[in-house]
Length: 338
Image 1 (cartoon, rainbow, N blue to C red):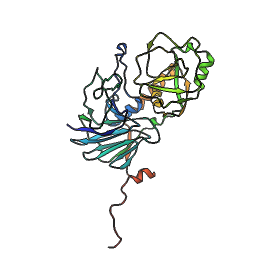
Image 2 (cartoon, helix red, strand yellow):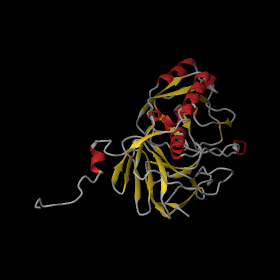
Image 3 (cartoon, helix red, strand yellow):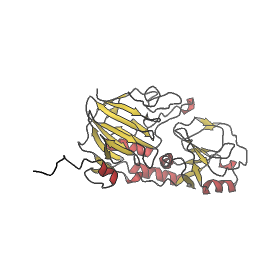
Image 4 (tube, rainbow, N blue to C red):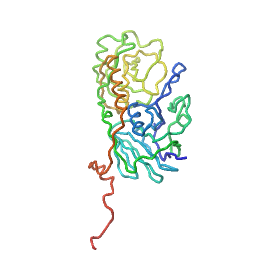
């Protein structure tokens, strides 16, 4: 069977689909992509269901090859560096990976997460109905772990793409990470009005300690009005806990199922990926919106994925130095004599 072969992989490279839903009551959270919009965009470009299994790529980078046949790929890693056999490519691109060729993705000047979807299906066995990898519990993916050199990912129902790479145009991925929209609550009453104002005005600095479980924020600590403990209740992705030290923690894809700290607010769904892409040391602020505004934002986000993702050939379309250096602009060597 045709397969993607992992030649090298840094930390944090996993398989993720739309998530493992329906098991929160048993202490099993959904996992799934850190940036749901980017994950769905890669699948849409590959002609797959929006929640299909894809490779989530961290700043650790990954190197892949194909075995047993050509594999069509949609790669959505804006801000990362991409090369096919050493030739630079755009961060958002569809291509056909043929046997004997090597695709390399490395961290670039922006972003923390990206996605690679195959034109077909990554054929690994689901766990509780999902391929989403939750490494802390060892569920999903390949034996509940991240990808490593030597791993083979069988590709079923594979389809080859265009012979030459094509750049993807997805303007909805150009998101301002400096302001993250939130809905207050469910325990915002644990904070006095001046502390809510302080939370919203910020600014907050994203800590480099973050991972798939949580985004930690540094800044002026918040003060609790009713103490920093509550009866543990369920937590959603994007819930913002404020523990005893007063520094907010945004719970992300690999969060725990319940928590006992008051939650001052919740990041709205369309801004989860925006926050996930912020690197450590960057500053953000929060902006309060209503539930109706959050629902409207979600509907707008889904609407952009109903149409095909536009593409154009990568043929001297980008004259930036990185692109030109990746091209073979000389067909041979001559001393100038006939």
